[in-house]
Amino acid sequence: MTTKGKLSTAALQFQSKPLEDVPFEQVAKGIAPFPLSTFENFLRVERAEENLDFYREVLDFKESFDSDKVNGSVETKYIYIVQKYIEPGSDFEVNIPGDMKDHIIGAQKEKRISGDVFDDAQREILGVMHTDKYPRFLKLLKSTNLNDDLASQAVRLGVSLFMIGVIICLVFIGVQIYATNELESRSSTTLQTLSEPYFRFLAMPFFFQGMGFIVSGKYRLCGICAAAGNNYNLQDSKSLPPYVKVIYREILVNLGIKSPPKQNDTADTCQICVFDIANANRRKSTRYGRYVFAFTVLFMVGVLAIPPNDLFYN
Image (cartoon, rainbow, N blue to C red; front, side, top):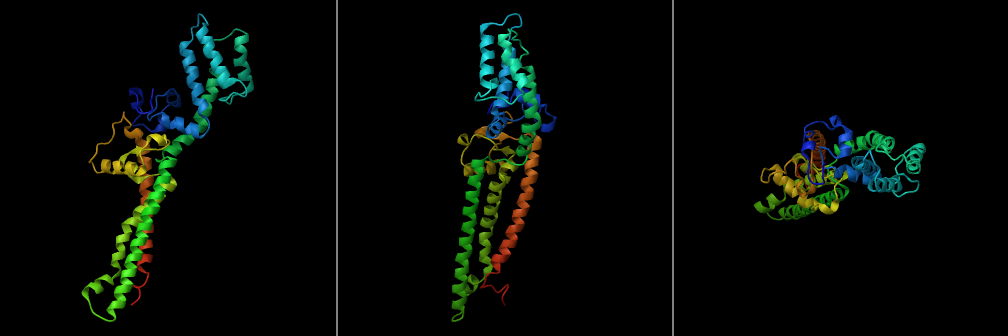
């Protein structure tokens, strides 16, 4: 089984394969090339976690079933599944046709409880997850690597850095105005240097990183995490460190100062990307990075055009 923090030996065999090549039935059983908690949390967000829970409960029921004798524990398990997932109006009722429900519910009265009593319903639910939920989960997994909480933190960090850049520009524009006015009455090498617009370029890293983090938060795709090959998508926010600590750790991984987590250990509860997820996120984050850089260059041209500026107004 795939646990929240580790990948099983069976799951690791799929680590380098495209996810589309991994049989979904294996994923549903817990043999997934990613911590299954990511899929569980996705279903929870989709309000469909009962589907996977029901599938697993039926697997456990089959394993404990004795074909020669329906003992008390088996019947208790059967009643538990029926009351939790099958009976109309139950809190975790799965969406299956009415005739399937009637067949399952009637099994106890007709004394025909068997190991395959839930088979039709199990196949129905597996089909729903396979054709509806799982494809959308894979699409999300290959286009994002931040959960909602980290994404909102990224936006706040980006806005803060961008505003620092604005402040730096305003400070140097003010210094330029002062130096330009003073040069009209006296000559000074220092004032001449301060009257140049090039100091505004000191704000460019803040504009670039600020816009980068804003885009990361908006699209839930962090280029730093993608470069490190890690994915924090759909994880429990409470178990994750703040976004600043997350990117600090990933920068150290990218620089080779800190070792990346092993494939079978999700350090800091982050998800280790399987091969195609990591590549997809890297490609997309690289494309976003180019857009951000182009925007920053155009923005800096506009900043340099603000007078006083001899480059544009001579």
